Image 1 (cartoon, rainbow, N blue to C red):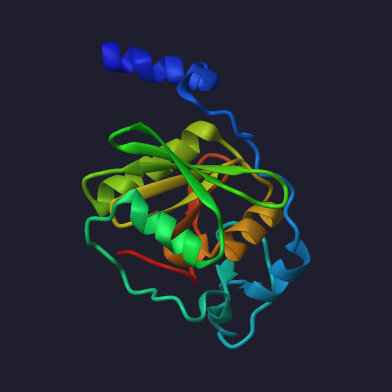
Image 2 (cartoon, rainbow, N blue to C red):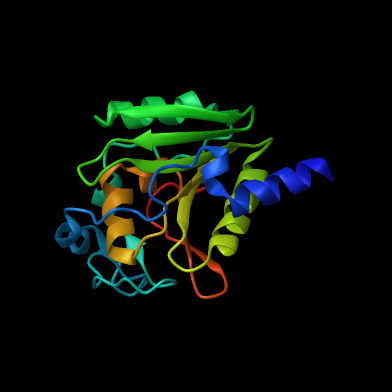
Length: 195
């Protein structure tokens, strides 16, 4: 019960838990390039497709993740695996450990720091469920990725800023990209996938 009350307290008073970064994703540069990296899920036209931002129809084009290994990874990952991936993409990352299974990563960007909440869970299934639940709790504009046993919740954003950031950082290629709808979450295919 004490742990539950502590978690509720953290949710209600984010500042008390060390969350000082913006809870919304800052406006992203490069939203004009998003259209060239997305398409619809029309199976009749696999070669081309038309750009769409409609959840349930949205798909990443193959070139969005070119050069990144997309085979499912079920090894036990640590937060350091994600930090190394982001640093290899040229991002400066600062980690703040909230507890043994939760870290905050601050990515330095032109619009200011972007804080990612990274939960370390026991399995890939648990990470997918955790991310799905967190997205539903945070509502429209919520999004994140999960890979193996790591679940990453990102700041709330509109679809263009979310896609620009997920593509610029290549998070959409590192983990399963999941986005909040009105009352459910949607996986965006075309990037990293786990079955």
